[in-house]
Structure formats: C-alpha cells, structure tokens
Length: 439
Image (tube, rainbow, N blue to C red; front, side, top):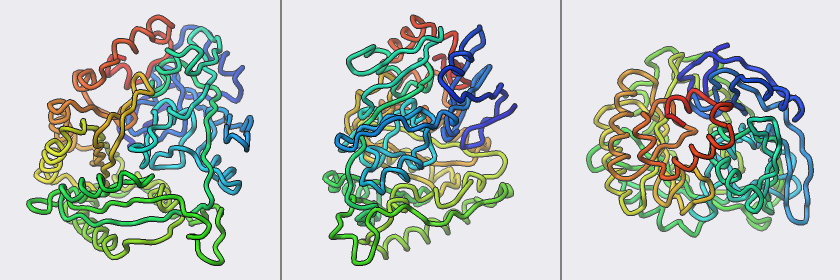
C-alpha cells in the first residue's frame, strides 16, 4: 500500500503489517526481506516507510512496570506518549522530555532522539533512557544500556530505526505538583530581540519562540518567546484540579484544503493576528496541553496544506554562528515569500547521547512550507546556508535533503554505518530515507 509521513510528502509503496507481541516481531524478522519499524507516523517525510516491509508497532502498547519511588517506567515501544501522560500525570509524574505532539510512540521518540522546549537545560529524550530491549537483524534480542552493549545503545538513540527494532524501554519520569504551567510571553520586534529573550530565559525549564516568517526589513525575525515551568499547587489558583487531565476538545479538519488557501496574503494576516494576540497576553497559568502541544487541539491539521502535502525544514546551527545564519535563513524565506505560519526557534544545549543525534549546542529553526516546486527549491537554498555555517538538518523532519548535505552535518556517520554493517542491520533495516541518504 502507499503511505506517507505526517507531511504527506513523499508518499511511497510498502508492505504494511503489524506485530502484537515480541514473538511475532521475531517471526517477521525471519527470512531475507528488509523491514522497518513504524510508530505513530509523526515523522514528517520518508523516515518511517520501509523500502520493502513496514511493521506497525502501535499494537505493542503495554505498560510493563512503574516504580513510584524512583519514577522508573518500563513500557513496550508502541505505547503512546499521550497514554503515558493520561495515566501518570494524575499520580504526579510527567515525562522528562516531550516533542511538539503527544501522539508519538516511545520507540519513535528514542529512534528520533526527540528534543523539547527544555533541551537547553535537560537534553533530549535519549538521555533519560536507562535500558531497552532490541530485536536485531538475525531475530535475537539484546538488552542494551549505557553499560551493556553500549555502542548499539548509543547508535539506536537517534538511529531512525536502522539498528534494530525497539521492543521495550525504561526511562525515568519527573515529579510535578500540578498539570498546569506557569507561562510568560515576551514580545520581540526583531531577531536580535528574540535571541536576547531566549538567552535571558536560560534558567526557565522550558522556552520556545514563534517567529513571523514573512516579516522583512527592520521587523525581520520578530516574534514571541514563550517560557514556562510546571506550576506549583500554590500557583494553580483556588478551586482548580491540580493534576487534571487535559480535556480540551479536539477540533478536526475533515478534508484536505484546496490548493492555494495558504498563500502569502492569508499567512501574513494569520501571523499578524497571532503576534498581536500573544503580545496582549503576557503572563498566565495554562493547561499542560496548551503549552506543550497547542497543535494537538486540531486533529489532522496537516490537511491545511492540501493533498500535495508539506515539508518542514528544521536545522540547527552552532551557537557561535547562529545569529548570522538565522538572519540569512529568515531573509531568504521572506524574500521568496513561501507561506509559512509555523516557524519555531529553540535554544539547544550540548548533546552527545546519540551517535546520530540531531541536537548540538546552538539554535534550531523549523519552518513549514507547502510541498511544491518553489518550496523544494527554497529548501535546497536553505541547505546551502546550513552547510556553510556548520549546521545540520533533523532526520525526523527530513523529506528531501541531499546525501551531501546530510553527510556534511553528521561527524559520527562513519561509525554508524560500520555498526550497521557489522551487525547485519544494513541488509535488514532500510527506509526510503536511508536509501536516499546512503545510511
């Protein structure tokens, strides 16, 4: 059948099947066919589409153990982040790192080494994984941790499912007093002010910035910085449930929007409304879902880009060179006029937890574009800037970067390829992305 990622671009043909138990997974690994594990399908491009066979892991969705004293949680790889939060937040626990959506699996979070709004302080998700069980190319199952099969453990964190199939994982949850967030919004009139606010917010656990991707001239890079922390019981206010689940009703987009609905004029208007609304609401207490996962309130929001889909260009630039590179990237986007409502900037800290991990100390910029000829050409131009400034693109968001762009940004690529060859993973685990990039 034909499937795609969250961006609905590209769409590719694969043999899709499911595994309900670890034993069933071992049976699927028998024989010569190549295979790839797929979680909730929230990677944007072709990273979770197997060249030959794709196995859906969402049926491996059992909670195995939870130690309330230490916060150590053990689950199967197909367990959804949303189910973890719904189950454990009422007991006073929250995941150590979350990406921009709760509708992802634990296996996918490890394979993508997801980072969140707290990377500048706490690192990415792989840092909190204590051990995992991994099915290898020959069907054998290994326990992997920082002290056992360490090389395979580090390669699997951020390895995009190309070292083996994660069956179970253990990681530590963090204690929280409430399910609410104390949020402050800082208004920035240009890119320099955005960066100044991000640097001034380093002591806040969570920080993220929205940028108006169409602003030009003296307003280039204008936006809003949202910084937050878990609210205490004293801050939650009288009469509020402190560990409530997020019951905000979902709105759904029932069909793909017609082509052209998102254009320069409509996006410019939306950006202006969003900027002014944020500027007028600068300090408040919000639900955890509204702070961490605002887009989850709209089901199937990816359909606004139409049937052709969309791409996201997400890069990270080393800290010392970030300001110049970000200015060039935003200037190029505003010049080309490609409509993008979603432009997000985050400050990342040092990270060496995954052999092929994306984060490095610096700034990461993510921008969505419709998947048309104009945007694909623009993305190639942005790649040239990324390479020139020593940055790299995020594999979980990638749908189209070239092999040369990829190879320039990942210094541990040689070691990753050698481990794949030595363990037999190269012949067994392959995706359309791995074939495109020579992994």
